[in-house]
Amino acid sequence: MKNLQYIMDEAKKRNPNEPEFLQAVQEVLESLEPVAEKYPEYVEAGIFERMIEPERQIMFRVPWVDDQGKVNVNRGFRVQFNSAIGPYKGGLRFHPSVNLGIIKFLGFEQIFKNSLTSLPMGGGKGGSDFDPKGKSDGEIMRFCQSFMFELSRYIGENTDIPAGDIGVGAREIGYMYGMYKKMRNEFTGVLTGKGLTYGGSLARTQATGYGVCYFMDEAMKDIKGKSFEGSTVVISGSGNVAIYATEKAQELGAKVVALSDSSGYIHDPEGIKLDTVKRIKEIERKRIKEYVKDHPSATYTEGCLGIWSIPCDIALPCATQNELDGASAQMLVDNGCFAVGEGANMPSTPDAVEIFINNKLVYGPGKAANAGGVATSGLEMSQNSMRYSWSFEEVDAKLQDIMVNIYKSASEAAKEFGEDNNLVIGSNIAGFMKVAEAMYAQGVAY
Image (cartoon, rainbow, N blue to C red; front, top):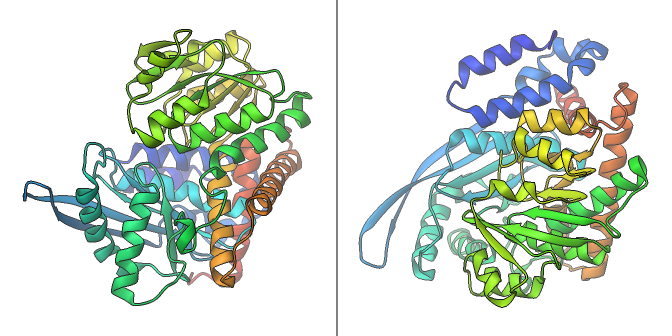
């Protein structure tokens, strides 16, 4: 990194205890070197420095009372990263691992992801170190109400529109929306991922999982002349993204043979029976190991990393950041895997990404491949503004068009800068250019 190394050095000085954020910044700045050379005016205007510094970082306490009457205190976060092309947009994550650095990394990635969708949405992210696991509905409701009590003063349908993420599903969105509506005395589209009876969008639940498959199917056909049809697929995770990536991959003719959760993974050589997984994870809220009780052909293994040792044609990491390391990437390559699509945010370590690119796999980075969720959130915002709802088929068709166009934008940007089929560089450049042009037009004061 020649022209932008000074920015990376400064970022390390300012954010020494935020490794995930620095990892994301490094990857983006390395991709943008040729842009800095071609557009020196962006360097002179400080676009790159401003892009990696959030417009606003909000941290607040969240006190709540558990079922035993004990007062608990968690931390809440909202990082409003960039509003150059639209209001801040990005999910809320409730997980013990959440800290400011994690939220900054996710918010930074969201800038480019939202830009790629072509919808007018800026980048933001939020959440809390609260753990919903093992909590009663009443405890979760009281936490969500306390969280929204503070967050509500910083968000709005034209300012910042949060959504769900890890640990935040329809239940949590409902509790938060109810509190916001009560406090503001208004019915607006301030949150996405809402229930269908109060402004939610059909296909939002399926969107991220479906989207990664739409993106990868287009990329595989264009780059290698291959598709999901007849392929063996390994998917990490068993939450919303993994379940619906499995559903769409199966619809497209693939055999999905593995899923995981934070405890371990299941391998079913006959193909995952999705009805069982949905019952276990969506209704019973149990661990994935319960699957083997119903399907004797399947095996369960403690620990998550071994899932990548299962031979497959296509791998879709859909669990969490940095879940797939260099050794795992090499196992996938050695076992004949030809495509990797990221359903999670930054699930592959830098070593893994290098292995995928050097071995010419079709590699779909998260900011492009998993943009289906936020794209459909953007469609939900549009429906809320119109006070109108599209059918499932209409939303799904719009989602597919968006994901295909994201691939085309990334592919064309990569080709323009002499990096054919490198979708990491292509996605970063395509996402950056729209935001940079807006920031430049709006002046240095921005």
